[in-house]
Image (tube, rainbow, N blue to C red; front, side, top):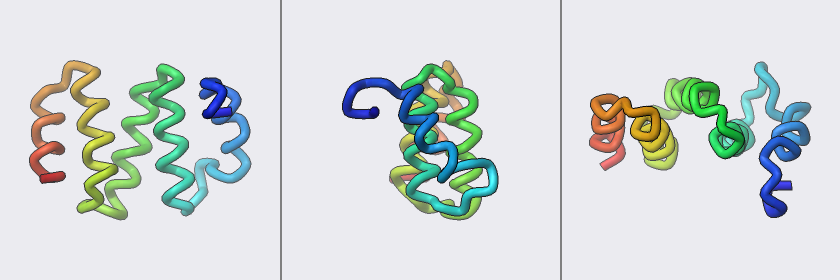
Length: 86
């Protein structure tokens, strides 16, 4: 679904595997990416921040969260996360 540029279908396919109680970090990261591409930036950011609680030094998660903050106009939060990623 992702390769066909259909983030909504990708999210629906991920839901049984990456639901609210999931501990599968790669799938949850993928879900956050799909949420962002589907226009659900706040929900994606919340998921990234949840993932960062368990992996606070993960550069990919930090960059993704920072990018979302930047896109939402939250430049101070974005800058803080970009600095952490470096």
